[in-house]
Amino acid sequence: MQIKLLQRIELLVKLGQYLQEKNDNWQEIKEKASFVNGWFLPEFVDLSVQNIVTNFLQKDILERWVAQYPQIEETNKSPKLVGIVMAGNIPLVGFHDFLSVFIAGHNALIKASSKDDVLIKHLIEKLIEWEPSLSNSIAFADMLKGCDAYIATGSNSTAGYFDYYFGKYPHIIRRNRTSVAILDGKESQEDLEALADDVHLYFGMGCRNITKLYVPTDYDFEPLINVFKRYNYLADIHKFKNNYDYNLALHLLNNKYFMSTQALLIVEDKSIFSPVSQLHYEQYSNIETVLNELDNNPAIQCIVGKGFVPFGKAQCPAINQYADGEDTMKFLSELYNVTSKEGENYEDFSKTFVKPV
Image 1: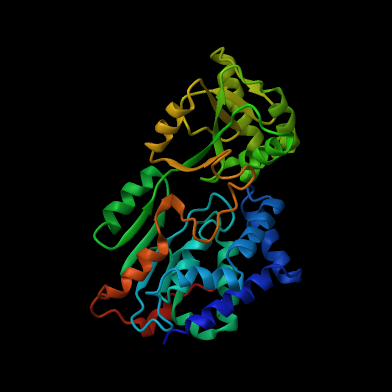
Image 2 (image 1 turned 90 degrees about the horizontal axis):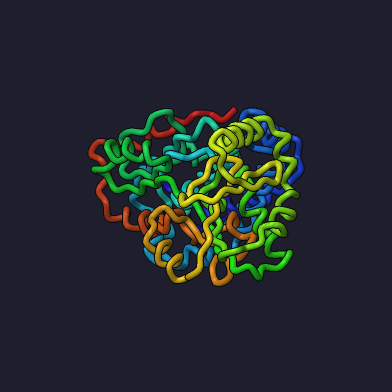
């Protein structure tokens, strides 16, 4: 039996309150996540958690979100089993997919990324601790099979794998995406400070991180470079520094022009994707040409700049700003009309649950 929508909202609000507590157990879990994955700096874990609390786990936000989908029932009388393949590039990047499945009243079978399984498993453990019946509707597995629908996030190469195995079922499959910023050369100091966050947070590894700038012809980079030096401490992280040194060596060997903050290489390049520790830029003389180019590019997650996502907000999506522009809640609400697999026994679902460490 699925718990009611009001109970689900209350549990999520309680989770948000828990995430803001300073209790020893939660602090140890966050420290463990940073130890297991060296890319998860403690400040990045805290930022990701705070964004989830602020933008997702508030009662009024959850209620307004659900109200947009009248198909979502108070009690889902025919919950489907939804397999979720989570990415692991930034802390708790897969939480929104779980949140959507949970609030829609479906069962979730989760394949967590090995790079980000500590935090998500702990959060699920807390929900089950507060509502033990959830052990019958949320589980982890190393391999997903027998699900009614799938939500899978990965690279372009793994997307082909997902298409092959999940394509015959209702699905959302996400591929490589990235984000860009458009500058007009009139940005304030505050704008550039905020842009520095969009570029550097999470080492630039999120799909909403800025990996390319579009700047006017003869743009003066000096103010931007000076502001970006605030993040030069990232060069003290050996995993990041290794990437920086490797890319620097390539440019030196190829006698290619570049600028540097000593922690970030700024290189003129047509590609919207840039490697870790590098930021691309392209000069423009006609902004309409740039906009047309971006409008037709399916790899764009978001655009930052005046008239677009505000500077500094790239990594703070609202609860209804869905990855790749695909409405996850609409997809999940339409599953109410899908017939579950014959013979599927959800009574035994809890047997697949992997207890978080």
